[in-house]
Image (cartoon, rainbow, N blue to C red; front, side):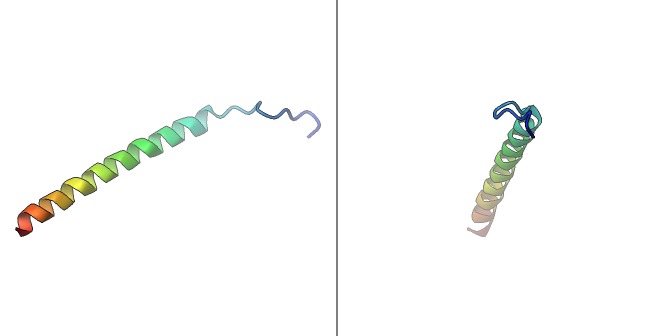
Length: 44
């Protein structure tokens, strides 16, 4: 632990994972909104 330097960790993999998570979340929210609009129109 004596050789540890703060801010020296490689976080590229975590950044890619987080970007993928955000993209997935956007798709899911979009699909849910489309389904809700369809249900609202079909129920009218």
